[in-house]
Image (cartoon, rainbow, N blue to C red; front, side, top):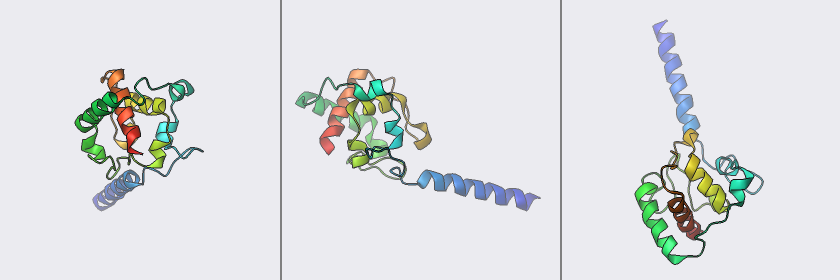
Length: 134
């Protein structure tokens, strides 16, 4: 019985590890956007970035990115392990509004916390920076 329980525990752990190791780009919508981002509601998807094209916002967003995001996504934003490559077309094709929505809500299934405590202006600045990484 004990051997059976140990085998079950090892198998369960392997399944969890394998599921977590799956490439983040597997599930995409018709635009090629990661499903976790594409599930943003239409209102969020249509939101316009108030900082688009503003160099000061890009610089502020980069500083915020390095402070809050680089630990998981890397200083180069290429991601590692379960963290999405933020330079990939699957992220870059998303609207600014979808990305701000994701920052607010997070994606706990892939280990991304909610950044709802970060003021919305700062979330927009991070997105402004991310969009320069195309």
